[in-house]
Image (cartoon, rainbow, N blue to C red):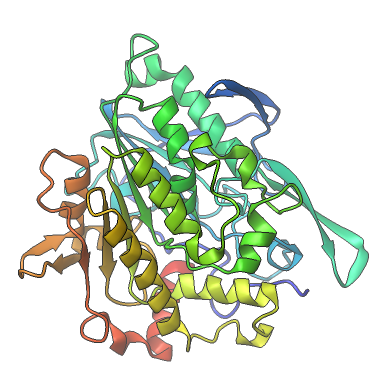
Length: 423
């Protein structure tokens, strides 16, 4: 299989256009390379934090209120075979292999702009997890991929996303007195918002039970998955996710609440994950954000299909199937909405943009209820994390009416892709 790249006029990484903020309010913490032992639940696990090619990992902390915590998983693509993991000079890969690119929250907007007076979480303690392993924060292994065009060429990739997450979790527990002012081992924050965008949205969802157990047993722990609704392929599930020979082998790192997750087909993977959370943690709130015609999620579905062999490589940028991606998105989120009316909500914005947490749309997005009441995304989110839940409703545009169908032109889609990949 040939390597798969994000081509055209996009920037050198998968991510987001950024601009410097007024000041660096996030504090960078570098992780020394090596092995560490962490305790998760009743078991000890040896981890080796790193990025895809063995580069050191780092993460960010923004100190704030000792009883309020935002834990954010950054996005940045994915890779699971030689075609998606190989990187060639002057080519843009489909994943971010280092924390040095597009992983600095000081250069991001939205909820990560802690200088914005309109940010309702500006005073919370915040944790930013960079993403550099191509495995949606689930891997704990080295995978070696074979070049099909050269059987003597091998590509080792450190899928250590779960190891990186587990290290951050260990750090937060060890530093709870200095960082949070928690004066004894049993004290925990009162509220935690777990959020993730794009690939990070899957990391947030799949690692939520560990956060709940290790940091927030007594806390209200809300979860928002941003720009990752689970429209994937069976080939991807079989190649990347489950089994010792899979690329990521996520089962070794899943919390026991997911013990019955596999086997599962692509159409039911994310509904089963979120359904498990909504059932197991009945008093918590779970939400999903997406745009109705997300061009980046559609692109990654195309990448999966090219990787599976069900789509020819030249069709990588064929976006004629965006309505089909959208139909699958509506089925997934609609099924969850119907199955879990008490503690699940969706927020579906018009258009083909990708994710909201890292952008100014975090402050400007708003939708109307069926009764004509306007609710902003911020008020929707605050309804999850506050005692006043009036704004936390199922909100969406109406397909074929006001979901931004006029934007689905070549120029419109390129604009949406450019928003995520840069100029």
